[in-house]
Length: 134
Image 1 (cartoon, rainbow, N blue to C red):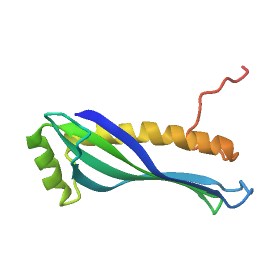
Image 2: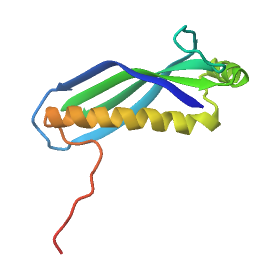
Image 3: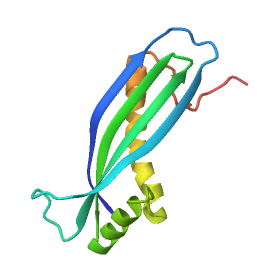
């Protein structure tokens, strides 16, 4: 599997309140679609699939919301592409690519979300290492 492209198609962030009381932060990653991708731009022997995703961070109760949508283009041998598309008809992703795919999406989306959280003064959805006095 090779990454042929990665794009954000929608980035939305809203802050509804300044009340941090009882704040809970939940993240969700959803694969919405997997399709074969045809383009004259890619001259390769491998075939390409497009994976559309939706990454959400919800700050409850009604504090803020981040929504990031995008797609990943992945190159595989022809036989593998047919297997992936066939399994996707049942909304399943082959286990051998699922973890790598999710890690690619999470790495890029988490970095973008951290940038947005910094700009809007939102609490970070990922905890960072910190130093403490003994």
